[in-house]
Length: 168
Image (cartoon, rainbow, N blue to C red; front, side):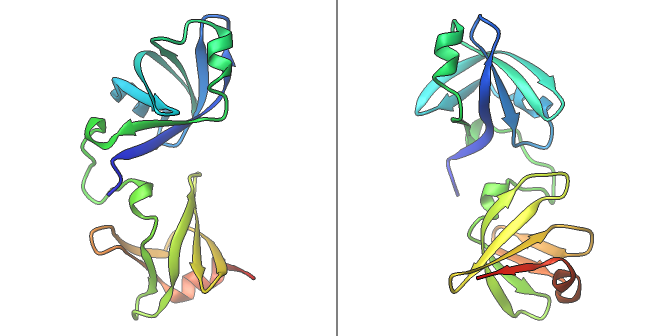
């Protein structure tokens, strides 16, 4: 399993005191309040304050004192150590743990390997099979089971065929 988790992406500086606006990749922006430190571009920063705002948040980080310093972080990923992450409730998982999972039907037919997930109200998954991509939304009834330990995502074939888009 990955030792770090990407929890946000820096969008832009906010104000003149070094605060940054980030797009959160967690279930809610409030989830960022749980992290005492973050890593951006390999540098560790102590989190001084978090202000959730919808699916974004504003972070104040020790060492980022002005707008110029904050501007250097634009577009960078905000990572945390897995060990700093809160314990997950049962039957939940980090999306990074789903990447690389085998995508199979309920009857065991392999459809590909999960290579990308775009977090959204209904997450968008991309699987790859022999250089071809399959994009599908995790709408109700599509995904039957996600087993990160076995590295397997099981889908309902009928429902999957209703939402899947094949490329290449």
